[in-house]
Length: 224
Image 1 (cartoon, rainbow, N blue to C red):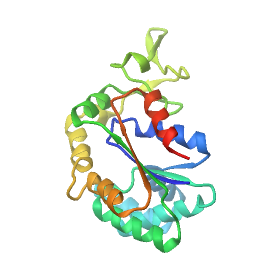
Image 2: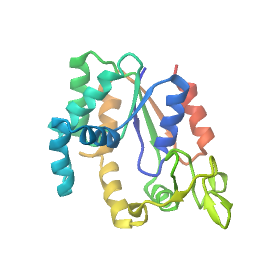
Image 3: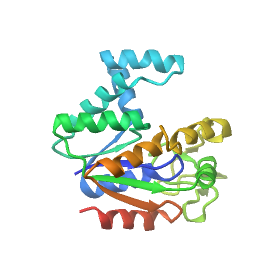
Image 4: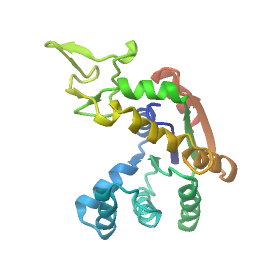
């Protein structure tokens, strides 16, 4: 089973991806982790990518896509859930073509739908667990509120130390990320729509404003 997962920052996409991964024994592949692996390993692609990242530039598709495909190929037998890529229409078209050429089928596209204002609110209130970033903690939502221990808030799942990403408190940074995601001309929403129109994969669209359990149940019920 091979899956693409889409959702704006703040939608809980990473949490739901982890649930699906555990349920079906898939490799959960995150685009950021691919870059880090190649850079740490000193690969040729990693060295090229680092030059762009160090300058604060986007890594071009001719570097990114081979990295992604190489990682997906390693998970060909087990199956994969790809999270965080593609982020643009051009990347969607290139990935679709590359998957077809490599003989890898795309079985499902999961889209978590959430309005922009709610997504921003969730980003600014979320806290990251030092032990597992997919442990949901949010200061504004009672169901996933961190617990207090020794006078400070800790992870509600494992008791780990919590922190807030600096860019999660930066409204300009959040807006830039969301500008890319909600762009339905050339951005990520354009990529989502591309796969809806041009792929044989089953599309699972869920309301991201619901609770974590409700969303996961809805997704799992539609996966076979």
